[in-house]
Length: 267
Image (cartoon, rainbow, N blue to C red; front, side, top):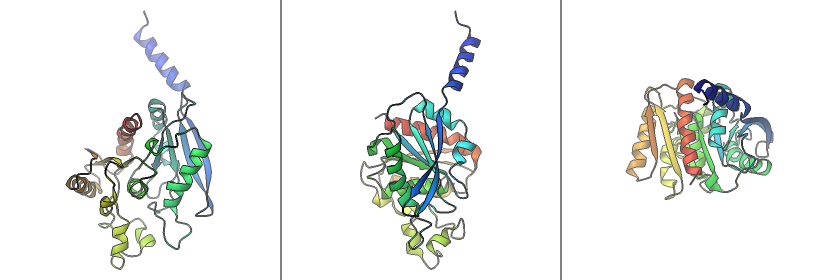
């Protein structure tokens, strides 16, 4: 009879031996004429083609945030068996293509150039039903923005603590540097904020999962998006949990996010 202590030791040994593979790579962006650092996390337990989740960082973050701040992310990759890709989204890019600014073409980079690079260089499926995208804060907004505008690329989208309506924050996070002031460019702001893009979601095109902490300064705008999606009869999942706009909450939420994407990929 195997003792529980031995089972625990064997489990720990297996977890240590079969850790996800983490690559830090540079991906050239033709749109921006520069290399973009990206972390790719692959499950070690398989060499077969996997699904892919693109995981975006927040304002003032970078490509290394998720893997450094959430070490258990590697265990989740092994647990669920799909590849996670964490690109650098620049400082305050909001993952937009900014007209006339060659340094800020992050929509093109993530939704086109990066997807193409990953699928040419890694063993991942090339069908949209095996591609998802999510992120935190600025990256939560970015994931929804990119997925809505590129429904031919992504089949599932998430957002954790996302800035899903930028208009209540007109002086924050470099947005006016990208779009001009809200006072003078209201229409451009409307076109670049997720909550005003819901009419673009095609029926049965996107699986959607949104979560936000109840103490987060973005909680009200996430509730508003949830209510608008309900009003428009757009199916989605909405999760609220105690928590603030910080890594304590994001470390908790990523488990729910990744479980959601696994349920979609398994279909």
